[in-house]
Structure formats: C-alpha cells, structure tokens
Length: 275
Image (cartoon, rainbow, N blue to C red):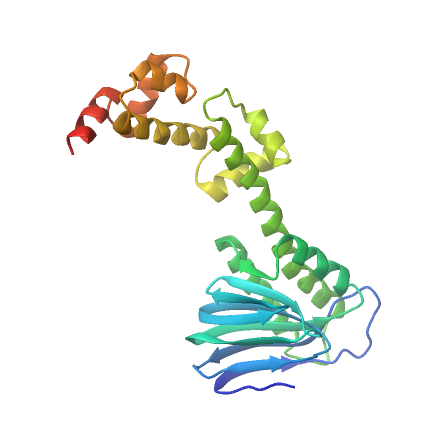
C-alpha cells in the first residue's frame, strides 16, 4: 500500500500487450518534484524500481539499511520487499522507472552485488542515464506503437550503467591502491594495466577520463606530493627524499619537481618552512 503526500508528478503507465520471454518490461515511469512531507511506504509491490535523484535529496530505507540520496545518486530495489522512501532535502526531484520481466532477478542481483543498492553515478553516467530515460519516455508517448524490444534494450542499458560504474571504480581503485602502496618502487604502465585488468587502450583512455591524469602523470603527481610532505616535515636530505619517492637520480627528481611546482626542492623547503 502506498502512502504519498505533497508531490507534483509527470508519469506514464504501460501494460505490454504480450510479455515476451527474455525481455525487460516497463510498468511505469515518471518525473517527481516532492515537497517536505512526501513519503512512499510499501510492503509488497510486484516489480523493481530504479530511481535517479536530479536535485534536492531523499532517503531510502530498505532491507534494514538507510540510504541518504543526493543529486546524481541512483537506487535499485526489488519492490516485493518492504521499503520506504521520503523527502530529506526539499524539493526532491527525481525520475523513476518501475519495470519487470523474467530476466530481472538475476540481472538485479548482479547490480546489487557490484554497485550496491544505492550510490552515485559519475558525471558521464548521469548524463547517459537521463538520455536513456528520456528516450524511453518518448517511446511510451504512443502506447499503440511501443517497440517492446527497444524498451527492453533501454532498460538493460540503464542497468548496465550501474554495473559499469562498479567495474570501472573497482578497476581504478586497484590502480590507485597500487600507486599508494608502491610509489617508492619502479611502477610501470604494464603494472597498472595488470592491476586494472583492462586492455591497454581502454585503460589509458578511461584512466585519463576518470582522473584527469595520464597513468604516468598520476604516479608522478603522487610522488611529488609525498616529496612535498617530506620536504616540509622532515630534515631528510633531498637525495634521500628522491630515493624514498621512487627516483634513483637526485637530478632527475629535482627536474621533475621543478616542472610541477615551479620551484627547486631546496627553494620549496625554504619557502614553506618559513611560513
């Protein structure tokens, strides 16, 4: 049973003429703008719900856990299980999709194990989520001309966004952990690629898109940040610091340091110790 208060909505409800095996099916989708007292409480609802927050904030309570939702966050739940979601920071604006189908259980289980019940999408994923949702909404404008196969593909693409977010974040998290643990050693591009478990082409392209650095640029930046800490907080010699951050040559270290900071290690230490 739903308990819903104070909201503005734009929604479409659709019942497919024939439920084809192996496809996802839309039950309803819509756009909500919810004020302070909005709350939905359900004990059992026969489909799955995918909800993306565009502005404001809300809270989901599901399977004994509370999830605070902000702009860019998405959640996926099985509505057959008791759940509550309500406004936390009004106005809470979100788009949603209720869907079902024979393939839902397995696919949604994979999303939950990887992405989780709720979490943020990266900027590119947010834009893509809205684009897919908008296309699906257009597909449902004429209920007599709905392309069931296209709708199923669009739902699959939305769920895949969540899976890709988990895979990408885990891959790069392993690389960042590798750098954090072994920056004093000789780390090669091949070491990073092996840690990410991606092809060389995709790793280099996606690493830059996600971090803003090339793989080598990130390693160099991390090393220089560690060097800055040592220059300011310790009395170690510059040659020793160079070795501790992965440079065999003090001259090479000093050259890289000046390229990134505009100062020699000696002058950087002198200026920052005077502050």
